[in-house]
Each structure stands twice: as C-alpha cells, then as structure tokens.
Length: 252
Length: 290
Picture 1 (cartoon, rainbow over the protein chains, first blue to last red):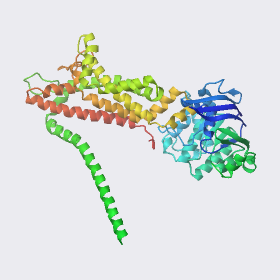
Picture 2: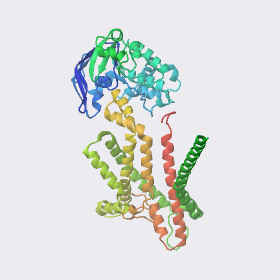
Picture 3: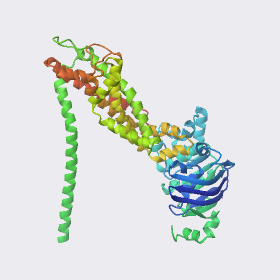
Picture 4: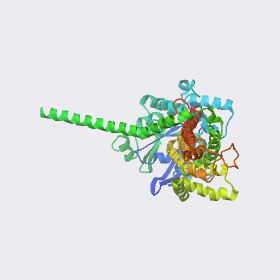
C-alpha cells in the first residue's frame, strides 16, 4: 500500500545554485501527483530529494524534512533503506545491459541477498504483469538481455524492476518523454492501474499527460512551488497568474 | 547555364575530396596491418620448418648435439604468466575500480593515477633490476617467483588504467538505476558497474598479458632461464623470450632456427591465449546485450 508524503521547508542546492527553495507540500497516499513546470525549475531535483538520490552528487546539499508515512527520511533512516521503500523510474530507460530480462527485474532483490528461486520467480512474474510487459517477454525471460527490448518495453521493464522490491512510493521522472505515443499511452494506462497500490509522483513536461493521469498537480517555477491543487483546478481555474500563463502556453 | 556548370564543378570537387579521404583511410589501415602480417609471414617462413613434435616435448640439447626443443620454456612461460596474472590482474582491476568509483576527484586517486602512468613508462630492464634488488637478493637466488613478480608489476598500470577508462564509460544512468533500487554502493559497483564494463576490462587484461608475455629484459635478472625441466617457483625457470634471446645471439645455425621457431610459437600461443579468454568470457552473453 502507498503512504503519504509530507514535505516541509525543503531546500536543495547544487554547489551554490539554490535549486529548490522552501518547498512545502503534502502528497496524498495512493494517488498520482503530477509535477509540471519549465526545464530547470527544480521538479527533478524535488523527486530526487524524496528518495535521497539528490545527495549522490558530491556537490549537492539539502535541508528541511521529508516524511514518508511515519518515516522522517533525513533523520531516521539511511539512504539505502529509503530507496527500497521509494522506487524510481528515470527519464531514459536504463535497464542493466548485461542482465537478462529476468535478472533485471530480480536485481533489486538479488543484489540485496535474496535468493529463494520460487519466490523470485513469482515476484518477477507478478512485477512484469503489473507493468504490462509479461505477455511480450514471457518466452525470453532468461534468454534476452534487457537492452534488446524496444524503448517502450525497456521503460516498462524498469517499472517492473522498481515494483519488484515492493516500494510504497513510485517516483517517475518524465517516464515517457523518450518514448513514442503508443508506448506513452501504455505507460499512462499503467500509472492509472498502479496508483491503487502505490503513491505515485510523476514529473512531466506534457501537460495533457498530467491532466490524464494525476489527481493532484503542482506547478514549479524557478525552484519554488507556485501552486499545488487538484489537477482539475490547476488546468481550469488556477489561482496564480504564472500558472495560468504556463498552462496556456504563454511561456515555458 | 553558368550556375549549372558551377554546380557540376562543385559536385566533382566533393566527389574527389571524398575519394581522397577514403583512399587515405584505406592506405593508413593497410600501413597499420602490414607490419603485423609481414612479421607473421616471415616468422612462419623462417620458423615453421623447425617445428616438430620434439620442439614441444623435449628440453634443449647441450651444445653440439642437434635437435632438442623448448618444452621447458613453453611451460616456464606459462608458469611465469600465470603468476604475473595472479598479481597484475586483481591489483590492476582493484586499482581501476578505486580510481573510477570510489576515489574520483580525491588527491589519493590523482596520486595513484600518476604513479600508474609513471610505472607504465618504467623501462622493463629497470623493472628487472628493481626486482633483482628487492626480491632476488633477499632470497639469495634467481627464481620463477621473482620473474612472475616482475611481470605482474608490469601488468598493473595497463590493467589499472584500462579498467578505470572502461568503468568511466559505464553510463551514470546504470549506477543510478542500481542505487535507486536500494542497492548499497559497494554492491552496485561490484555487481553492476564492473559487470557492465567487464568486456573492456578483460580486453585491458589481455593487452597487458600479451605485452608481458614477450618481455625478456625483466626476466634476465629474475627468472634467469633454465636449460632443464623446472616448474618450481623457487628455482630459476626457463621462458620462451629468454630462450629465444639466448638462441638468437648464439653462433649456431641450428639454434638460430630454433629461435625462429620459438618466436613463432610465442606469438601463436599469445594469440591462442587471448582468443581462448575471449571465447570463454563471451559465452553466456545474452542476445542484444551491448
């Protein structure tokens, strides 16, 4: 089951560049929340702060608090533990190129020492079914490399890989921006199904996509969150002039 | 009309430039491959006639007796190279992993990288003398062990720097994918990054192996050579390059022929070893893996 995320006065820097400024936000459990805004506005940095991937860059710094369920991730836990509970899907599909499809999905469990074959088989099948890839790959699970799949299939493989470790939150950083329209619509259908089990945060440049998949939408601009509301409200009657300018295409 | 002529002329110039560039590239390729082919053909021409079963099964005959072979030198080279690889490959790969994954940007890493580059430039005879002073003198005698150490140390910089380069070529997205799954960094490095870079790392090891396989100078003061059978690490041991050297500078025609045969066998064995490793490591690579 998904859990809610409570973000309080979150600030983040890359070197001297203050990329996120005083973000306060409540992301509801078991819903899809979209983050929109022009390039460089801090959306990606924001999601990378939720699974502590931000700090893997040596010049990055972060202050403030993020609570996932009852866990204060910057106070109570180590990053490795948190990343097991918060899955992430990146902009470009990044399967492990030397691994089979099966091993890609099982990687998170195997690399953490999990080796029960029966259970692994079950989890791999379930994850691939959840990511709507099972029927396309079930005959080549151990024969083909993850890198041999098409771009859209690779991205669904990456989603299956993230789901296999059974996270509570799924972060998606522009998951469809490198994909063709057919693959994009498959990913969107998937998000629709997955949000009953996971809390989903999706960064997107595509406003129709935000409108299609998300109940809540946040608009970021220059490192600040300008507006956060129900997706319907943001796209039909935004309260901030800058949000309105952005969604009507006047800048960005 | 004039415009059309000008267009024609330009097209011709482009076609000529294209032809010239292609021609130069082909010529360079031929010039690169030619020496290798020439050496190999000449070795076959001079050495193949002296190859027979005795060459691979007998040890050298004393001066004056004809026949004999290099069996002990072939086995000796195998022992020395095995020993060298045991030292050079793990240390080199370990160093490369440190440089690319853990020490990036640190002072220690820069120092290690610089040292490796200098070590790479140390003349092999100097390496032999250093091992003479550091291993042979304390032990009191020449030995296979000291020869293996000398060759092993010579392998380290090549293995280390190619491993580093190959690891740096692994896209950051792959590292991030592993970290985002909640895999600890050390585990991600060993099981994901190194595995992804392994074809290139293996190539680096093979380069280093092929290079030291033909080294003579570092063995003169260390492995020393041996005209009898020995596989003991504590005794002087024969090696193909040493044997070729001794035979080539001898005044006997018979030995000269054996030296040519030895050189041919050395090259063929290096090619076989490299191909074997490539074959073995390429099995199990999945369809579509890059």
